[in-house]
Length: 178
Image 1 (cartoon, helix red, strand yellow):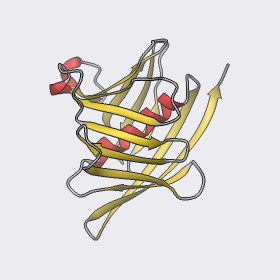
Image 2: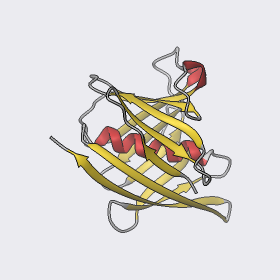
Image 3: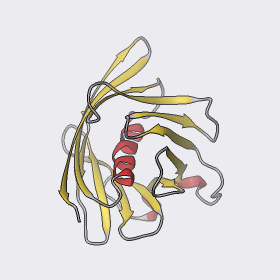
């Protein structure tokens, strides 16, 4: 089980991805009050650039269609290339994560199962599910358009027929809106 914990500061919106023993797996971090939507993900609870794992960006802050580009830290020098993409409708919780720039190699798929707060995330074999789960609060924060949200996501994973299906239940409370 993985948990997402909010740990915002005055200048940064931050989330910690924790394992079942509350040990930090990754820190998800974005600067507040910037014109672009860029999230950097670091190993453990580090903020050091040498510990960066990947960066997630969107070209347009306000868009109905979700399109997030993910670049691994070792390839961030080439801004046109991305290693993964997340595309779809965030409001309907209908998004697909692809490997590379194309829309052909699917690594994970998110589908709404009841309400927007409950959805199923199917992650293909040999894909790091912590990486995929880390994208969920990033896109949620990008789509919240500045409202401060506390997102608690509990993830239970099990293998079935070669596909890992992870049921996510996200409970989001807006704690401050202006």
